[in-house]
Length: 317
Picture (tube, rainbow, N blue to C red):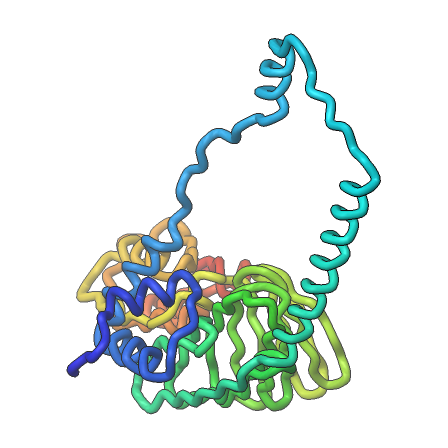
């Protein structure tokens, strides 16, 4: 695909939160679709924490300097100076209020529409530089105006919202989400189990006449007419992105459960005598909640759930 823009410049604008034109945004999204792996590497580098230098203690430094001063300067005020400063202060306050009101009423309306018809997740960038991972068979409609930023969602999407002073809300049919933080997943693919999953920050969720505020690693799932709130058992798999297929050919069970643990954070404990069993199977990490049960079926043993989606035990009766 031919790109008419300097992709390095577009990436720089994206990561610094600078607003992109419609053409720039389209080119960036196209490049991201063609270079998903490279983009994720760049993103990890950009989001890596940089050790901060030791803070400069201005008060302590001033005390050292002040102690060496041999005389102090005295500033003489007169009425004319005070009046001038007061007038300038009033002008700045009035100017600031007027500028704020002008900017609030002069927000340009911006809209964008995205649909994922592929068989894998796609990352798209909204006009406000927020980033959305759009899952297959999903679509979003984005509108920003003086009333804030609004998204209509069909399907499933993970949002990393760029703060810009405007509100950000998601209407997902039975679920309404107002952003109070930064990153979260909304899944309305199944009408009977719609949910909101928070990775970082805080979001407010409204559904079925109930309202709740979620914080990191918490979820709200709408079951029937009840909004249930609890912890996310396996955050890594909930927010982990694309699934993997794990293949084993006559591999010992202890090796299989180790590979599963590395790929999904699902821990499967083995009773004595099970580890040496040879297993031939293919496991999708997307079905991490049923991996232990599948292995128990293959090995002809029992499976206990110690913590759903997180820890299991295989044993013989």
